[in-house]
Image (cartoon, rainbow, N blue to C red; front, side):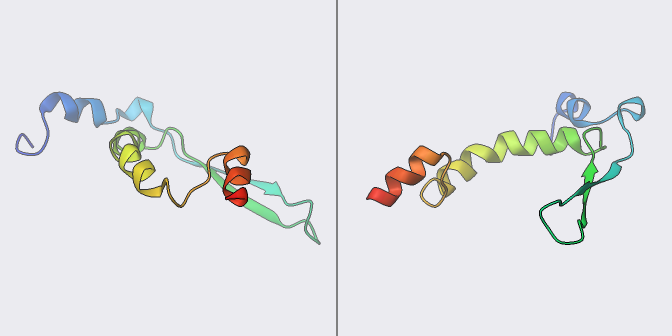
Length: 85
């Protein structure tokens, strides 16, 4: 363990049993489609991997944003500006 991450990091990224819940499954109707099919949604904000997921997102988000900046549109105004170019 100490070769990869420090003990403090391990403690920060680990979830305690009283902090974890099973995911909740619910459905949202798609009223715009014929027959009103249901769209399954899984809510897992207290999943056992949420802390490591947030850590990895914070670590990788700047790299992703840099790599995707040329191919991603982040606002309607930006999209319109790109159309005019």
